Image (tube, rainbow, N blue to C red; front, top):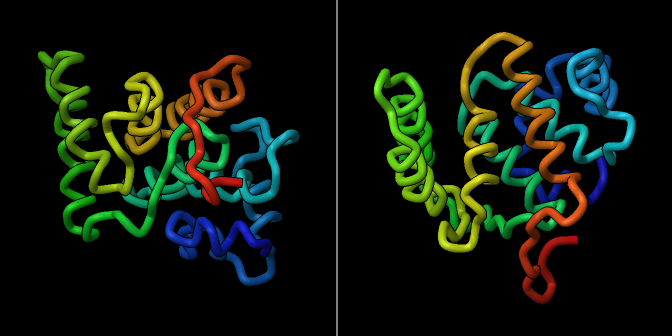
Length: 175
């Protein structure tokens, strides 16, 4: 693994990426995403993060991988050291899932749940574009491969779009 494995260690779920001892994380990621998520232009570490988002059934790991990917592409500043306890993060993801299950839900409720959850994941809620935050949290929703791959492709397209909102990286941060 490269230096990125250390930088994003908090997002690289070992149970997902190293499930098969006879495969490297890159081989596993390519196999897991093949046919579901286009990967030909992804750097190796982004491929790993996409595989964690696609194959992990743990919302905490999925969201951390999405945040690391957004951080790596310069769309937000993610500080894993500022994350809350796993139980706090788990409750934050479950609050989002509860919102998603409501029959009469509003966008304002969703945005409030997301803004309240972001600090527990080491992200300043006031500096993140709410559309990006919605796409990040959507990757945590359970579902079949069609739904998960669609949400990941939507996020990857947002992160690749020319002119997409990007944040200024602090000195020494990011890539």
